[in-house]
Image (cartoon, rainbow, N blue to C red):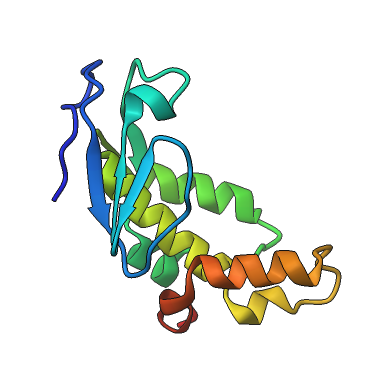
Length: 141
């Protein structure tokens, strides 16, 4: 269940989103089972324009992650064009958090955590693995 302000509103109504695993323990964030509730009035320093630009994670995985740089186009340029073509503005903070969780699961999956040159301690790698345990297998496709 999502409870949030409408786009452009300055309301700081608490919102929540259900995630597959319990999440971080941060002041103004309450966790109950797989549901995380955020109190924007306490969490955000400024919450004057609660809107975000998002892209569906499935679309990013299918259309952008495999992008290769060419002599005609840098990867960064391709990413900007993808944002223009496929992103939308949302005032739903729960959706933003859900997408962020999917992205973190992809970035911090085991396959990436063991890449040479990653400057992270074993303790940090363990924390990253534990951050998104149940989505690691689905995020790697």
